[in-house]
Length: 98
Image (cartoon, rainbow, N blue to C red):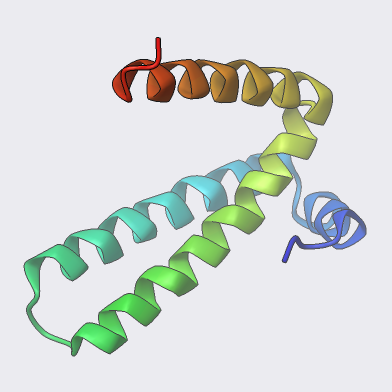
């Protein structure tokens, strides 16, 4: 599920672009940390570690949606199309179909 753009626009307006850029960085770091903890298999149960990763993914996706809006959704979408096209070609080559 994608968060509604109106809500994200309100967050950008309420806290400002600099604060939301900082928050994006923080949320990405928390996802990295959660993924590392998942790999190490220590501390919390596997189920809890997976839930932590899921929660951080949600946070990162919300922040990335805001960054997409902030830096120009149309421009970002061009890069997404370019990169998914490249991925498709690489997968085709890897499967021996290239």
